[in-house]
Length: 337
Image (cartoon, rainbow, N blue to C red; front, side):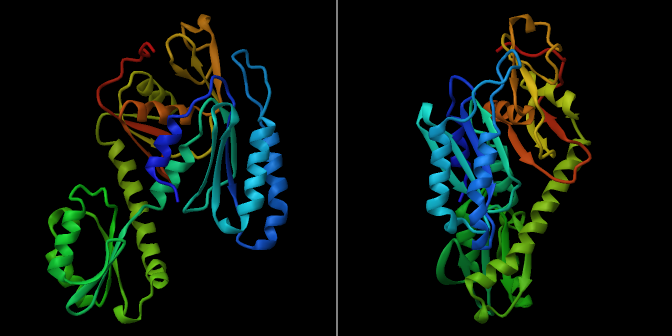
C-alpha cells in the first residue's frame, strides 16, 4: 500500500514538459467488472492532452505510457479487486509506478510535468496506519507491534518506546470493558493523546480479520473528528480562508499547514518569471514573461507547501474549499522564484 515515502519519491520526479501521466482507477470488487476496465482506462488516458503556455492543446499521453498501464492492468487487475489503483508513467524520464490505495477514490487522469499526488495524500490520511491492542483480564496482544503476550505495564512501555510523538498513528484498544480501563490507566500521557477509542469483544474469539472489522469504524470516526477539529482551528488564529487568500499565502511561502477540502481540480496558471500561482492569465504584473497553464492549482499549492516544509491535510465537509494556517501575515505580493 501507499506511504508518505512513496509520495516523496514521486514528488522528486519531473519531466521537462507536461508528459507525466497520473491515473487513478477504481477496480470493481466483482471480477466480472474487469472486462470493461481496460476500455475505461484507455478512454481516460486517451482523453488527456497537455496545455502549452499559449493555452493550445499539445500531444497527449505517449503510446508507451498508455500500453504500460493497459498491460499492467491485464496482468494484475485481479489482485486489485475493490481497490483504487494509482498509475504514474512517463517513459521520457523512466517512470512507471503502480500503487494500490487503501480506500476508494474517484477516477482521475492528469497530464502534467510531475505526478499528481493530492489523491495519494487523501488516501494515506483517511486510512492511516494504526495500532490495535487487545486486552484480556491480565495481558494484552498488540497487532502491528508484537505477536507476543505481555502484561499491561509491558504493553504500555512498548507503546511508549514505539514513538512518543504520535507518528505511530492512532491507537485502538479492544477487549473486555474492565481490561480496557486497566490498560488505559497504564498508558503514558503521550499515548493517551493518540487513543482513538475502544471496542468491546471477547479477546479469545477475535481473529485479525474481525479485529480490522471492529477497529475500522473507530478509525473512521477518529479521522472525521480530526478533520473537524482542524477545520475549526483555522478560524481561531492567523489564517487565510478561501482560494484567492490561500493562493496569496502559498505565493509568499507563508503557509504552515494547508487544508484542502475540495476534491475536484481547479485549472490555473503559474507565472514564468515570479512563479506566482493565479486563477487567471491576466492577474500577475510579471506575466509579460509568459504564463504557463497548470491542470490543478490545488495540486500546485500542495506541492509548494510541502517544498516549504509545511504540512498538508485533505479534509471533508469543511465550510471552505481550501484554507491555510499561516506562519506570518501575508502582504499580497508573490515572492520571486
